[in-house]
Length: 406
Ligand code: PMP
Image (cartoon, rainbow, N blue to C red; front, side, top):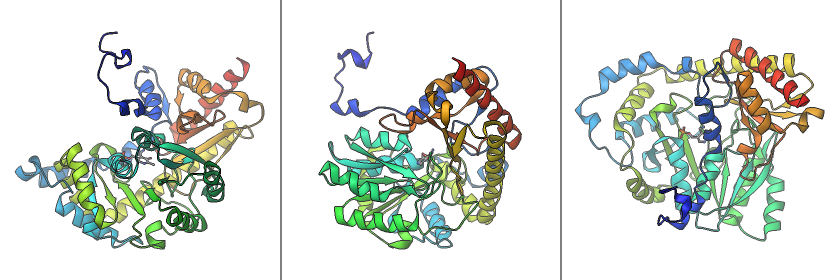
């Protein structure tokens, strides 16, 4: 086909080979094409009811003026940076303005991080399973990925040491989602966080600390973050976003990193988009600083706990004994592993049958750069009401029955 990049006639850069795209998004875009009623456990999106639409509209009417519609500072609107610093000062991970750059969501933070630290051929450690949109970004800069298994305490840091030893190489970057990991829902234990920091220092590797869900803990005890354990550690690069706490369509996030990196981050961001969407920064700034942000977060935690419990109960009712699931203390996701005879059903095939039955999830292989986890899948419990979750899990059980007799 003329114009098809694959036909070799376009002068593509070598790095275009590394643009593998989002396997997660290809599952969800398949969904968009479906006409019938589908219970959507696939996308990691906040509940529509959890987005304070009415308040955001009111704020928009109040705060948007001519200054909102021109170019802003590349590093972010000063008022938003101040609001982030003020809010963070009430959390265990306070920060300072000179460490922050506002980004277009968490994804741009990840892109900046990998852009700054990854040369072609560098070894980048990722969790297995992982958020493959993040690992795909590392691949776009030519990373060699090393997948390290996750268990109920997050990335197995002992296995990490052994696996790295086997490569005979030194990692340049360690990409981790420490709280309520996407996709497994597990949380990295304090012992492992401490050990990971030690290993990062031994290797001179950056830890990319991607934590969109940290504020959404609805059970268990707070686990100290990397920046609490080792304040101002130059090897910790934190990627944050308002997508899960507020609204993903706003595309506002930030990175919190060693202040010496800020000129580089600004230069890199200038080359991408000059500045993050200015009106949306003004909306977020006002929402966060008007008071009541902590109450908003508390409401989310309560709602997501209810939804997670509804999913647990539905799984026990309809899939009891056929699957094991992780037991997240927060965030959006449960990781489900098929058991016994059911484990012979490849979850990409189950996904096709499930779509026809009217329910969607993300198959395990889409959540591992090398396509592991044929027998597992990710469910998002955050987007659907308890009643819809019940319907969806029942459909899932029917899909599994159908897949078994194929
Ligand atoms: N990291 C993780 C672990 C995520 O789950 C997500 C969103 N699914 C992102 C980064 C990207 O966040 P954003 O939508 O703000 O770009």
